[in-house]
Every structure is written in C-alpha cells, then in structure tokens.
Length: 59
Image (cartoon, rainbow, N blue to C red):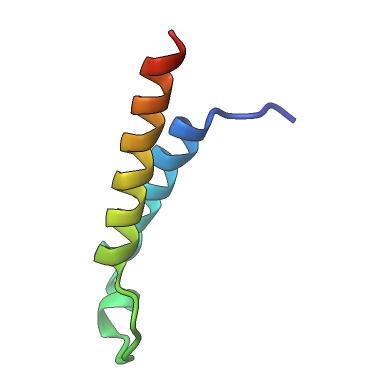
C-alpha cells in the first residue's frame, strides 16, 4: 500500500466534498447540523495552507 502525502490527501478530500455537494441525492437531503460542507472545506483550506507553510520551512 503506497502512502500519499498529506497535501495529496487534502486535495482528494476537497474533490470528494465537491462531488458530494454537487450530487443530486445530497441536494435533496433535508437535515440541520452545526457543521456544513463549507465549514469542512474551510478546514481543508486551512490545513493545506499550514502544510505549505511548514513545507516551506523545511526546505
């Protein structure tokens, strides 16, 4: 099993979030929760930024 880097996993997660958000079945769901896909996407954006900052420091 090959291990992907954290930045690669973040990109994959963001792609999945986009697919979920655009999925017709997701769009028909009626539920209320404290965390939205936008919140999750913002988390991954922040995580990606942190990876880039930490990566820049190690080079």
